[in-house]
Image 1 (cartoon, rainbow, N blue to C red):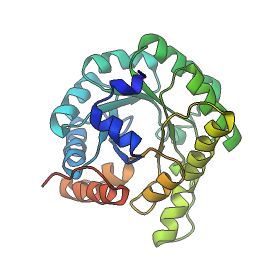
Image 2: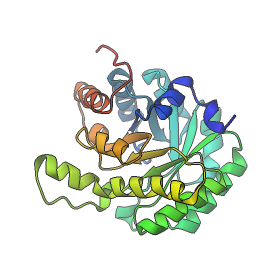
Image 3: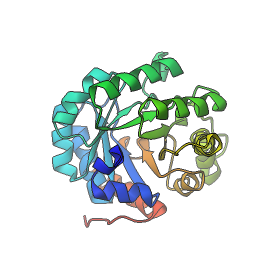
Length: 257
């Protein structure tokens, strides 16, 4: 038995089959109306997991509307227990995209400290930890190994905010995803090189339907997509995007509109 065995069976299967689709409402998005709209679209579009800000009321709202397991994201370990008590299936440290424009940078030691504190507070809850993309790739690899030793169950990558696409269309979408794809590949191979049991890697930040298959090819067990969905205002448009992501990734059951 591992902590991953505590996840809903549907999530376990999605990880094993390397097709998990997580829709991210936003770590700093506490707007209940917006979260409800995103949650409904995620459920109707065929996502496997919904990631919301770490707030017990949002957990209850999102779970009820989407019918999906809920992950809560924060950078303060003390916030997690209340969200888990409200029904969150797992917790996540990061991602950090919302903080970079504010000049807030997370180093390896700080992320490790948050991981250790979270594990103290919630010894049996599945914990995903985002590796900051501002670290050089070799340091991202080492941090992923250290996080595994500290009790993380899933590693998530990021990088969309640092990407500077030069091209339009498909080439630009690939350029946008390049940092998180590179991190996914590097971290996935770091576990193999170290001769330790590999943790599932979720590739997130800057992804699109074009690049989801590349994330899986790079070693990801699943993907996290935020702005491609949550920046939209129209719910039907959100559903269409989630369905497109689901189709690009494969698997899952798409509900009718």
